[in-house]
Image: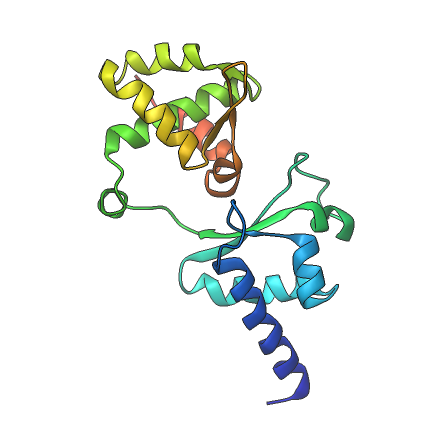
Length: 186
């Protein structure tokens, strides 16, 4: 193996350790942490790792906290971003059931996310509860919203406003969700 390949193989291994093993309250790792552990060429290391993960239907996902930057993010913007390993494709209904989600729980999450997106990212919890009561049994609504918050899909502030949280940004293609909802005939 050439020195260059060995150099990147070692960095990819260290990147996997950082991305797969949770050390903080939130999974994933900040860009500055990757820079510190891997060097300033960590974006290249992640690109190579992403190619390896493609065969496993996984991907390295970048989530920018202050919104999506221009087409080509700067190293400074990447240092502030958080990186996760997520599914590249989609879960089948059988796979979703195996991880503990019922189809109505997933539907409630999709409705909640779509509604929050439609309201420009912020909505009172009561509005989401009312919306979900039309679709789910009333006793499940509060339990499901608390579950979405606990799992990191939604977050709630002290004024009971709901927002999208880190996991939605990392795992959900919001544009595809909205397009799918809008293209479905009722």
